[in-house]
Picture 1 (cartoon, rainbow over the protein chains, first blue to last red):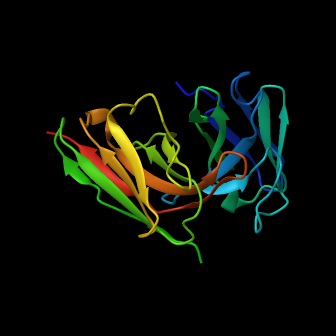
Picture 2: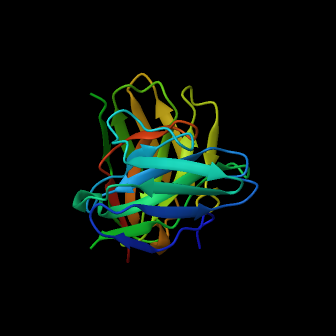
Length: 109
Length: 115
């Protein structure tokens, strides 16, 4: 059971907008920033969003992040087939642990 | 071009030890180990500060695993003792922090704990 809670799956059709939620607590998301990672099949994770809502260089602006209280969300607009991947939220916890969500498998229908 | 290359994985019996290495360019950052059991999600394992003075561990490995680094060799290590079947995973090294994210990852090295 992961400290951060994500839905196990999400889906959408090309061009659609999908959101993935991440629920934490006052010891992690509530007081620290959230990062999001994309993991394409058979590859290492890639940083998608850092500091709640900042995109690293090279990440398309179709990807956006937000945070409110002890929850965070990743939104993908203009869904493309190449977005089919696993998505993970992550944050530092005040128990001095890094914590990841359980991951959300995104399917592009 | 930032590159992280892990090595040292393999098959090991329960209770035995293994040391993983990660050679990295652009090494003056905090470094992490993150693992992924087959078919499962990501699990953070440990972090070490840029100068090696601060180290933190996941509860699941505390007291069994030790993270260290040799900045003169641009190399990160993970000494894994008293290995258990549940330590079986692909182990990634990653560079970064929890504010700006883990921006660079290696391709992983597979550790299988089995008798």
